[in-house]
Length: 390
Image (cartoon, rainbow, N blue to C red; front, side, top):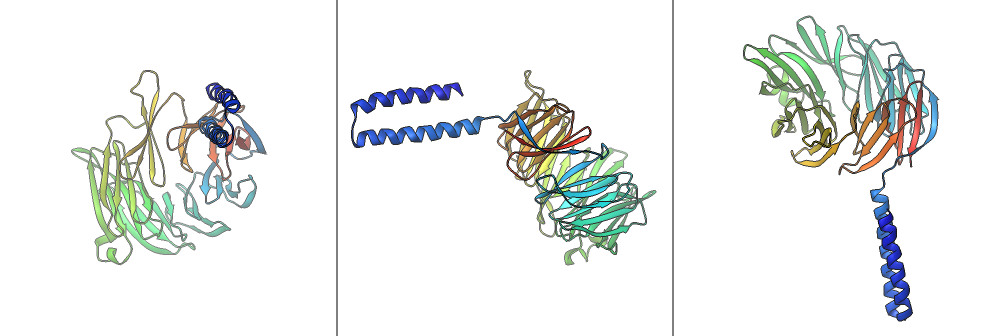
């Protein structure tokens, strides 16, 4: 910063000398040049600045349990816990709420639809931006649940050695269901539902005499899948690999996150693997948002603890950054990367520039970006605070 100030001061002194020597149009050109340099230098100050302080805009007593979580829900936030769910706007004000009692709530969001279900229980609640849209009970315990943009829900239900993957409308009416067993298909690690609700992707962990392998099955419930057994249109196999997470980016693109890398599948009706990236380093943390996927590894440099890399869906690394912060959580929100620990949080741009480095006065549980320039929701022991970094 001082270098920039000294640079500008030097130019100013030189311009004073020139002013004494020049007149008319020559002086006007030098004046224009000075203004341009000042604007450029000011822009550099803004670009290079790291925000390290904040102002508390709103503070709320947090009566929620420590398991309270926030998810981005359009321009608002969805807040859910074992006691209920509420929709919070950018000022921290509750737009609507719904109370219930769950042992272990899990949630999923697709655009302006959300589902909250009781894992290992049977309760399912569906919401849109105006509040509760539907509620029903399943006949079997819920393992996983996903929602499409129109509110239809896919749920993985368990029954001893049998696993059911069921489709429901907002009233709980069964649209379709599939039966699988560990012996036939493997154990379902994760499930994804396309935004239009027409395709399901399931990652199955398959143990056999040669060791573990993963099978990723694609099911299509449009006309092309009606002619296939169990609506299955494709099956990918990965030997010696675990794929704990899968998701759809949109109707045409799906991602498989593996313990040794990731794969990108494309296809409107029959998704096929188009991109495969393998890592030699052990993946410590993985997170994603839309067309970006972030991975954190142990550092290969002595002066740093971690190495952060971000990839696009073409398999190209778009950012590489070395870090020393001992993080507890890492997430990607609104194109930025948030690293969180008990003492505070850091925010990095998609290019790897550190934008925010906040040391917080209270022990931090979680941080969520909210709509509004520089606004964040900070969850700490006993409090929820809406802050703006400065």
